[in-house]
Length: 161
Ligand SMILES: [Zn+2]
Image (tube, rainbow, N blue to C red):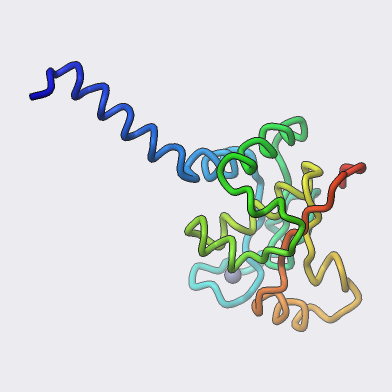
């Protein structure tokens, strides 16, 4: 029979374990990312002029633009990714569908791809960064097919604006 104090400790340990999942990473993404409205024209909650509702800086992920609220937090994000999702640092391409399946939300996955890019951890590979000359509808179609990904290359020597 556990004392009330021991039960309290155990509950705290259990919630600690849950926190060690990807919750810290997810919370960091939500707290440090600015994202625009989705421009895929397929979202059920799409707004009328999503192109006008974008951050004025950051990286264009084709679906929307992503910027960081604080450009000094790259090291914190890198440590969180190393702790909670080290696969992203293996040098292979990881797209938002794969990341979304792992962290449970494709929107959050896109925000992570963009946030890590603007904080200088990896490169975001998107139709808008690789093939900006293509027509918008083609870029949207490619993005819809999964062509928005991150690729970690070490060492990262430059910080993308
Ligand atoms: Zn959309």
